[in-house]
Image 1 (cartoon, rainbow, N blue to C red):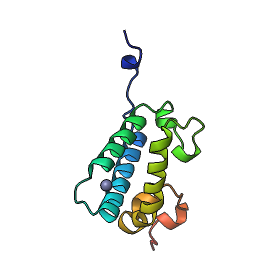
Image 2 (cartoon, protein in one colour; image 1 turned 30 degrees about the vertical axis):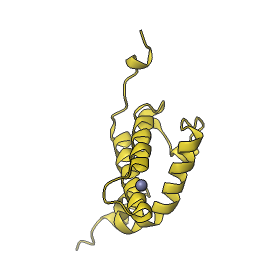
Image 3 (cartoon, helix red, strand yellow; image 1 turned 90 degrees about the vertical axis):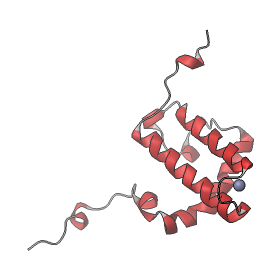
Length: 117
Ligand SMILES: [Zn+2]
C-alpha cells in the first residue's frame, strides 16, 4: 500500500559516517549545554530525527553537506536546532575528534609518504 515502505533506507559508508558525526555532535551539545551524561529527551528526539532524515536522504551516497543541499528536508524547527548544535559543537569536534573533522581535507601525496632513504 504505502509507497514509503518500498524506499530503501540509506546505509552506505557516507551516510553511516554522517550519522556517527551528527550523533557525536549532539552528544557534545547535550553534555555541555544540558549537563546530561546520556542524551536528554529533547536531544534524543533531535538525534532520532537526524538519523531518520539521513536514512531517507534522496541523495544517499551522493549527498553533499546538508547545509548546501538544495532540498532541505528538515522541518524548520529541527533545522534551527541542528544548526545550533553544529555551531556549538563544531569547535569541540576539532578538539575531541580532529581526524573526523579534517579527514575530508585532501592531503598532498608527498606529505602522506614517510620520508624514506
Ligand atoms: Zn540535551
